[in-house]
Amino acid sequence: MLSFSRLLSMTLASVVLASSATALSILPEVTGAQATLVVSSAVAAPDGFERPVTVVNGFTPAPLIKANTGDLLQINVVNNLTDPSMFRGTSIHWHGMYQHTTNWADGAAGVNQCPISPGESFLYQFSTAGQAGTYWYHSHYRTQYCDGLRGPLVIYDPNDPAAGMYDIDDENTIITLSDWYHLQSPSITGVAANDATLINGQGRYPGGPQVDLAVLNVVQGKRYRFRIISMSCDPNYIFSIDGHELTIIEADGQNTRPYTVDSIQILAGQRYSVVLDANQPVDNYWIRALPNSGNYDLATGFFQGTNSAILRYFGAPMTVDPTSIAPANPVVFDETLLHPLDNSPVPGEPYPGGADVNINLALDFDMEAWRFYINGVTFQPPTIPVLLQILSGVQAAQSLLPEGSVYSLPRNASIEISIPGGVISSPHPFHLHGHAFSVVKSAGIDTPYNYVNPVRRDVVNTGDVGSNTTIRFRTDNAGPWILHCHIDWHLDLGLAIILAEDTPDVSRANPAPSSWDNLCPAFSSQPPSATSIQIVPTPAIY
Image: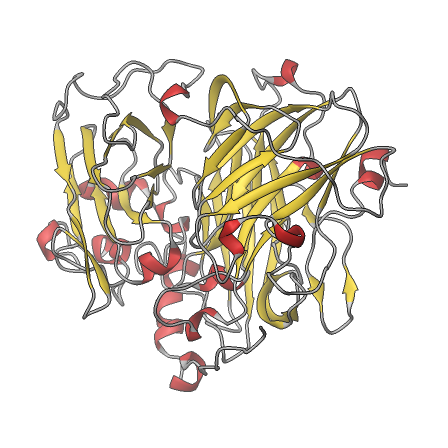
């Protein structure tokens, strides 16, 4: 028998499969730490426009994976991809997981593994020890996750220090934000412009049909922990819920001191847990996620329910869109006011350049080559993954491929990385694998340095022209870790570097299974027909 909260979730988002024309009405779920994820090709219409997509166990967004802190996750990924208009190799990154002693399971193709070939499978195994919070998983092979391979991952803490602030935290309080494109990602050229915003897998595009929107159901008087995940390939969002304050208690898997706002800017890859008190009159309220970019009028507002979902109080009408309005003078999010709950010290000395290793990154874009560059080098994923190169005996950064993109870091050192803002298509959300970092200088021209309990996270906004964002972390996790822009189109155009951390200890610290050894031979032996891409024309829909 379905629980009351489960019954209330019956309109939550899932993919609309064109083959059956049936809306799957309950958010797909994988309970427990062991699961099989079957990646395959399908046809779907999450915003009312049918197109080929990449799905997991038949769904996009992919199923929710739930575990408790300390669990060993064992996720078998089966590659059944067949559509020649999309990428058919795959790899899965478990975004935000530290992968301590399991660098081989981090999932970045060309860095930590070769892709999983069509018809093959691979078992990812890693511990969640020392971690709890809101995460996600997605393809880390080319721009594949833009075609649908992305889903939520939540690690619950039975001793959550914020548990007294909310009543409900379950699969029905997860909010995923995604950009959606009417053309398969390999066929998109030039500047990618999203056609729709999907909230929990449902949305509308300008001029499109008035398809159903995602609904989050609440009961008056209850307090809800909403876990907001930006699974975006490009745009950042201004997220808000009409008539309700949002109290932030977690950012990117890090518990924070409570911080109450009306709206949050959330960039690709970032996550927030917020507490919403359902203390308003019984009614329907707009959930808003305004992107900073998009096709036609998508980024200008919420006409006919674009960029929107619905918060529905139990007892409110179920057949009409909300009539609520956003506040005229909202309290907007300021990252510098967000602080960790545990007040851990920042690595290094409390002044700019006060780390053991200080790295400045100069970002650039070459219009003629149509590539991004960091310190004069554009990142090209190597055929032989960086981890395999290290395990084969290559140690020096200058000998590791891709040439010029690998930075060697010593063990147990404080590291400072400064990233300027303003390069084309900013702001850029930079994500570091294998670590959370302290943001000692947030984006903004006049933002001061802060070495006293600054926010810790794993994706940071680098800001616009004149900004300089600075992060600090300690090298306590041997292995090659990619630092990259999480706008997936920008990563594919070279906006990344590799941090080769404690290379002498990588082999001892990260024993890889024999199945990992088999990935590269299997992928390299594929015939050209298995990896060639069929380019399709841009659809004429307006």
